[in-house]
Length: 124
Image 1 (cartoon, rainbow, N blue to C red):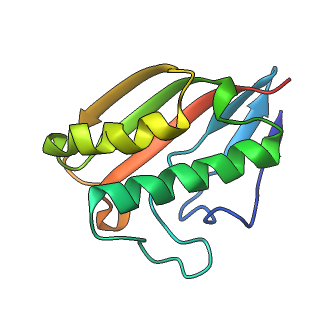
Image 2 (image 1 turned 30 degrees about the vertical axis):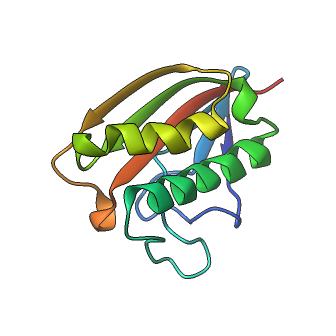
Image 3 (image 1 turned 135 degrees about the horizontal axis):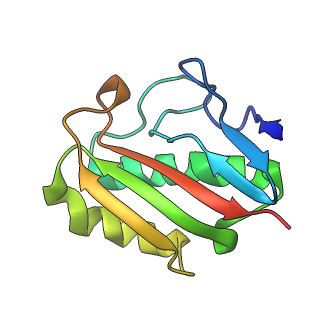
């Protein structure tokens, strides 16, 4: 097992890792739209926040030696399910391989974010 950490993505805001590499798979912690330099939420709408959360996820994938094409499963949390279509429009630009996915509305996300995304990816 190996802990994955990169300064190109936001540091964990609790007692967890950005990602764990185990048995050829990367398990990422949920990524919210934090700017890794300022620590502030990036963007006020779902599109901008989805872009930043996915960018953060991409940096963790890269740090582990993986990429979006190797993602096998994502779990997506939305503050408002009414943002589903707008979120999908951003998501599909990055996840062209169409990994398995769960996506649902939650009561609240850390720091008032509108979206959080976690992933499982192959690392070869």
